[in-house]
Image (tube, rainbow, N blue to C red):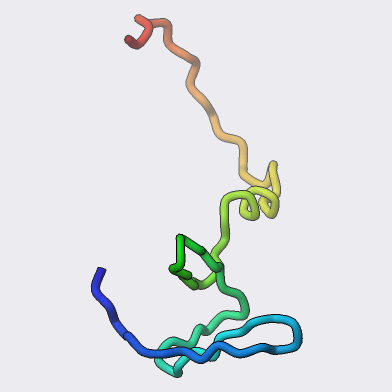
Length: 78
């Protein structure tokens, strides 16, 4: 994977939480990020919608009914 930026971020304490001050080149335009820890590597990425939240927010029955053709009899798949 090609790198777009390599630099140093400052780690500090804010109350009882540890925080990281990101360089301007690495700022996010979102209010929340996902944190993935793999060994000693941390990956931060904008928090996206996941399927569980998508299905929880969807309103069932909001799609119009559609005409479904009848099932055909045929050989079972092998």
